[in-house]
Amino acid sequence: MRLILLFDRDIETVRQIVRGHFDVVREYDTQDRLNPDQFGYSAIQLVVMLRPEWLAVPTMSSLEGLRVEIQLRTVAQHLWAEASQVLQYKNEATVPPSILRSVYRVSALLEIVDLELERVLAERERYVARLKAEENAPTRDQPLNVDLLAALLDRVFPEANKDPRHEPYADALEELRNFNLSSLDALERFLEANRAGAMEIEREFVAKNQRESLPDQDRRTRAGVFFGHVGLLRQALTAGLGKRYEDFQHEQAEARRAQGRRAVKP
Image (cartoon, rainbow, N blue to C red):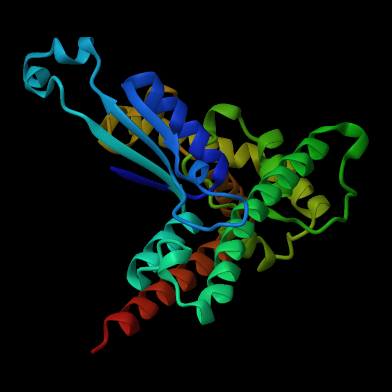
């Protein structure tokens, strides 16, 4: 089994999950085989077996003794592994000397991709932390970005409504720019005036959802919520802009349908 993860830090997270659910027979990092001046296939590999409590389940008892190898790698590591498989450049001995320098360069660049993505994540975490500290609060006229928007919606709307799986902040920013709500001050004032309207629409949807018990909303219905934070923002736009926002949504929907028709046109 191979799990391809976006960020290098995700490797350690998944590694701990695997250790917590299976008996690990063997574990190794393929990079440990390489000297600093060598390149090669990179992955964390764990050979695992089911634990006795799993094997006690009758439908799983036949799997006793079965060993499974789980490979963990980043997208960049996967790109190198796939390319080297096609080229059959597994290590220095398999590469023509005239091409070796270029192969080293590609290998180094892909390592840098992982390192720089981690740097982006760390810098973003520091930025978000500064946003939450009053002494580093952004200026009122600062243009919105996805992190500023997320922080503002966190302050304005209930925490229970936030959906960590799907909060399309970037899409919402595009919508806000169409209505000159692209600065922190402008949007904060708008939400102050229209938060109550958004929450009233939320209460109506929660009541309707609880009556009809819609299956795709069971988890959120039990929590007494319906919209995520971006959903509540859009309800505030509906409450505050009325037909202007409805017409905008209709135009956007028509544009998506037209794009879909062009995509499937023979």
